[in-house]
Length: 202
Image 1 (cartoon, rainbow, N blue to C red):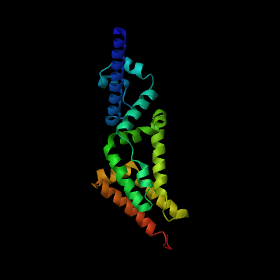
Image 2 (cartoon, rainbow, N blue to C red):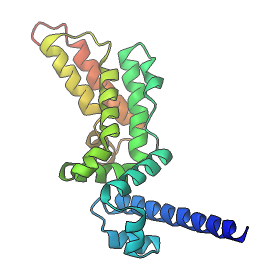
Image 3 (cartoon, rainbow, N blue to C red):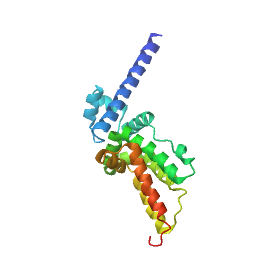
């Protein structure tokens, strides 16, 4: 019985240590970026560098654990909520309000991820499901608009621009709009493109 109790305590300590390492890494990724060193992670978690390596032998396993932990606490907006909206303009509005709220909640992490993503194949691999999610978002929002050929390309560009993190940051952080105002601004732009599609001089 004593042996089993000791093994249980050891397993609990290891789980707690692993959790501290993951949480420390997530916080550093959010505040500093994905270039945070193992030494910095160890210091924040209150462990030795070797302890980090015992739990996470390479960068990929650490990033995967962190991504899973972060996603569990910061789920992306549910595309099914707006996918069920038939009217494309209202669908875009519903989606953008949810997306911009998500950007606000996750601004530090999202900004650092997009900044560091191009320079790290490991981050690109770990973030692949998130990248695919945003492709699905765009495809969902692109449905139902009345446009063809080159004119369709213009509307797609507006939609693609609308769901970009930097678009949200520009409209809210630089121009001072709130999330709803920013979303409505992009909806109005899409509406303007849509209403102009029938003009002969397009």
